[in-house]
Image (cartoon, rainbow, N blue to C red; front, side, top):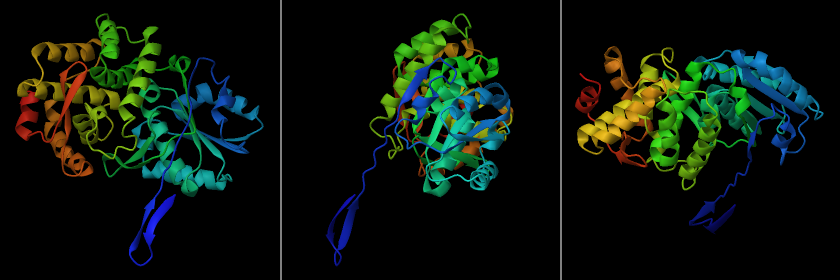
Amino acid sequence: MCWSGTVDNGIVVKVNRSSSYPILFREDKFGSVQDLFIGETEPKKVFIVSERNVSDTFMPDLTRQVKKLGCAVVEIVLDPGEKSKSWGASEYLIRALRENGAERRSVIIGLGGGVICDLVGFVAASFMRSIPYVLIPTSLIGQLDAAIGGKTGIDFDGVKNLVGSFYHPSSVLIDNTLLATLSDREMRSGLAEAIKVGVLYPELFELLEAEAAVGDIRGAYIKDVVRLSVYAKLDLLASDPFETSLFRLLNLGHLFGHALESATGFEVYRHGEAVAIGMGVATRISAHRGLCDAKTLSRILRCIEGLGLETELPHRYAETTWNGVDDIRRIRNGRLLEVLPVSIGRCEIVDEISRKEFYAAIGL
């Protein structure tokens, strides 16, 4: 921190913060857990936070490995699903940390999917004005998206990610063997986020396109999908890691995807499923505007649908989805800034989408 100026005329304060952490690609089911604490003073107590559909499968092995390092372990298990990405779950977690003696240098490990990644990061940023946290994503969407970039947050008052902060983890462990028990539906949800990045990165899109042609959602190619997605996302975030600009290409599919999730009470669609539909809407709007040609439209829709995802927004959710767009407009400082595909490898951000365009894109 440094400053300039005088007390009489005012002082300009300049504060720089640097975050450095490893993203480890392993396939050893927590065998390298000691590498997750590099750079941290040896924690006396580690809190492992997971969700009920994950904890029975993976938490015993992780707890055993952490205890081998001489750490006391406290296990905290939450209900699965978007409902745990909430104030109530945050309060429950904060209370559990306090009642079990968490200190400034205790470490929280988030073991679970995207909800756990977002929630644990948010609580870690808030508790005692920030404590270290580690992410071990067990879902595809967690590995290639939620655990990367330091974005934390919870839903509030029916609005997706309304409350949150940027707070990077101490480390991230990506182990593709943890995906073995994932349902087909969750795999497809994760692949939707990969397609989103792929529309911006041709190498990744072509890989996904080839697998979509045969409907493969679990092949050995998944390892390459995760790594390419991580590298691509970091590349896209490099110039603006805290998203001070509202022009974010990684929001492709998220405008109408988030609005659809909110419109359905977060109970009908997985996040990736909603993003896939959001990409379908965005690509059709782009085609109607003449920004992308018929071939690009066909390639994107065929890739999404070939991996078992929907691209059309049901008409019964049209009105509530459009109403949810207004909440997103406020989050984006009064502008929608929708990302529209132009070609594979190129997207354009437009200020506004009209209600008429939206309804035309969904066939109304």
